[in-house]
Length: 362
Image (cartoon, rainbow, N blue to C red):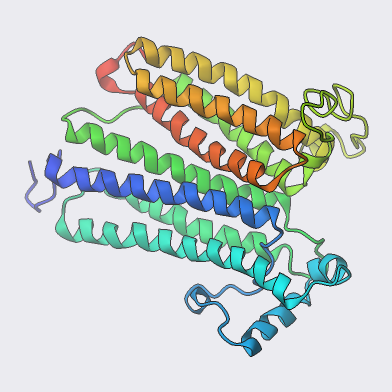
């Protein structure tokens, strides 16, 4: 059914199914870039490219002179002056960290194109159902914001007054915008899929909002842990109880700096940040178990299984990351699974809010 302008009011399956696949494909790319972002952070690669060139930066240096020029720019920032320079970094080592940051930025450009070009096509073909254009434009804006926040984050580590890393607050903003975009992509794809089946879009229930809010705070604290390099402060050693569930052999860590107050310590002290992140996780798990049980009662068993698998694997990966002394592959897997947990929770919240299940998702 279409209005006088030729735009779908409800949409047909032939119109909507390609849009659903497109949004899920873009969501998969966002999950991929979150994983690559973890590699970039853990290899200390994020500051290797000191300029933001959205168009020309798509090409890496191609000649020895270009590589040397990039390396010379990098030599001017605190990370090189204070850390990598004294450590004797070579041009070959610089190329390694440059590679990961370049891949990260290239993937961001590809995601932008993968979203914007099909959106323009669907818009031109007038196949976007009524009421979805503002939401799709909002997702496009979030993608653009992510690029701006990414450079804002990188710029925090380039000035002479900066430390050898980016601001952990800006890193958190960068990660959370990406994960918010992921959740929006998944929710919109699911709404469109229901529309193709002739069903109404879902609403966000109070319980669904609670679960998402609690997960959002956990992800924020995880970003704080990453930015402050707080994953190392608990100790390490496989199956060492002193590293997990204890921290340096005690339940509550010694060394928390309280001088600036509790709130300041919560987001600036690596010991307290790590402590809150590891124990708030169990509050999130409890809420997600309740969500999964409700979904199972609604005969949405696949979503229930996805949520259980996502948080179960995420908890195991988090513990193993600490025990391993923050091994790169485990830490990246932990971040990747965090993105999958966002997708699963958005799927669960959407399932609770399906209007054909009114009364069961409250």
